[in-house]
Image 1: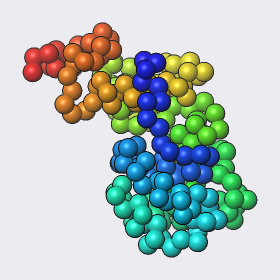
Image 2 (image 1 turned 45 degrees about the vertical axis):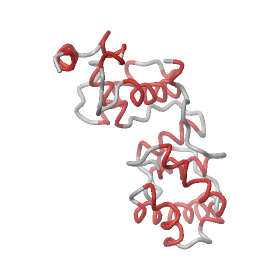
Image 3 (image 1 turned 90 degrees about the horizontal axis):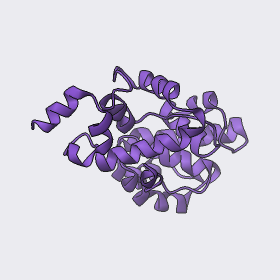
Amino acid sequence: MQSYFLLRVLIHKDPYTLLIAVLLSAQSTDAGVNKITPKLFKKADNPHDMIKLSVPEIREIIKPVGLSPMKSKGIYGLSKIIINKHNGKVPCDLESLESLPAVGHKTASVVMSQAFGEPMFPVDTHIHRLMFRWGLSSGKNVVKTEKDAKRLFPKKLWNKLHLQIIYYGRERSPARGWDIHNDPITLKIGRKPIINKSLNH
């Protein structure tokens, strides 16, 4: 899966811009986020400049990625907290990150992994889908999928492997328009009922 590692990345230059980009990517695509972050970061690429913008100004810039009312309030709110509570720097522990507005466990895990190099296995919809297709997790929920991934894979591989699985899922094993003949991993190790159903379509 080496070729699927870092095929596309969110535009960022430091932990703060990565945090904003990951927050924006919720229910959006990396490509969509990368279209609007240059404009946003030109105006504000740090928390001090971000709070000089109003929430409506932020919302207007990020509107194309969707969920802009919630995301704009989150960006403004977390920027204020980073200044007031963390001396203007993105906190480097999971609990503090998760306490920020509009930052959930997955976003916090991505920042811990990609900005600070801490071993994490953030689970998005692609990983959740593939772990089930491959018979590596029950598919009950993302919490269970994350636990199963951490149990199955060596910790030293987590930060790289979760990205590889995401990009493999996008290219070879999507939720819609899936052609199992282009998905060698599922063909080889996938759940038999899923393989048979796909082959019979």
